[in-house]
Image (cartoon, rainbow, N blue to C red; front, side, top):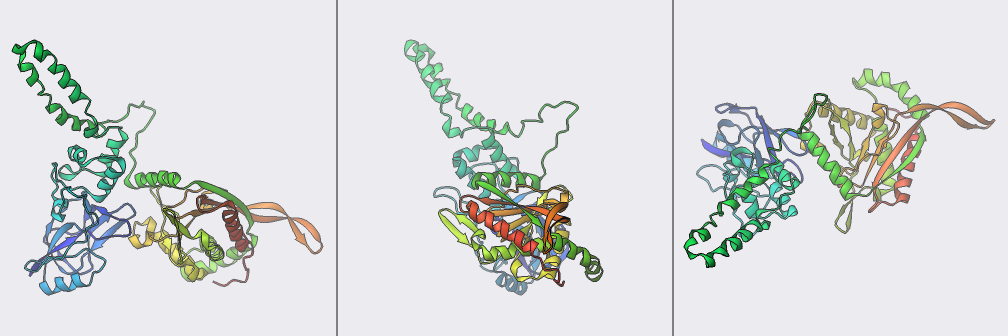
Length: 474
């Protein structure tokens, strides 16, 4: 038998840490290979983490609610040595595991501290201490760098996490409070020293006065100031108001929306499309499809198909921006905004949407939507999107101005389909008839998408919808 470290896995691009939500297994429980051991939340999705090999859960190193860096140990599993070695050799995308009695493979560390900064080992990530040299997550260190917070100030910042750990909320509250790092607040100490020094020459007997610079404890007290945001208490409100704290997902959505508006100059173009043939086709086939597949036939897969075709016609809409470079994506991966029962929004991705027929798209859309609402999405379901569509029409809205999903450069909102009187051209002349219309709203990043490209793209999507073949089979 051997003791094997189970580590926090890497659960997607740009994911540097995860929060342990719930342990599904308890100490002493048997674990099968690929059996889920715990639930972990990242800034993208909540997911279950499976064991890489069978064994007995001997020790839990991380408690529920604790934030852990990718690659840090989270549990000890007692298992067979050969099984452990075989498992670690076959998990290229997972952090390395170690067995007792064998040389411990290097863990894939996602962040290297600056020169001279104390380096935290994976063990420290689990048992962090509120003192100099304690573990800081890569996210916290990244925020500190962006905001100009030195390691000295960071070490003095009180943490509300497990064992005094500084959390993302702690450092963001510190920044939001407008508190400058301690190193940038020399005013109190220098002023006290000169004033205390002037009486000294006049009254030697007052020698104790110079020793009064015992205000040295004052700097030590200053770090407590950032704790104010944590105790910034509940705002005073009247009995006619209710104070609700954002849940974790809503906080992430809020931050991403603000970031997107800051990064991308948004422009929106609108087109109205006559989708009468499309509506009549769906009405004709939806009952038979429901009976055959056990699923609803919605308009969303038809919209996605039209968007994928338009992207093939205008590939410069399928890009992202990296500094002064434009990265053109060969894959057409369309994200679909899904409203959750909680009221929050999540965007699973249909990869290679241009390679699926209408039936394939319909099945994929239904599968992702159902798993999203049941909180069963996997990290890979949310990665790699190159373009996004949001069906605001499902809420009865005729149009909207959606916010771009970074690092994409465009997003489309499809509005509700409404009956309207319209002029119909016939060989016998123009007639007035009832037609089905909808608005398409196309928001795009004006850094790289000009009005001509953004406008032509949404017009092309409308053309594909208006030209829908009523003889299409599904």
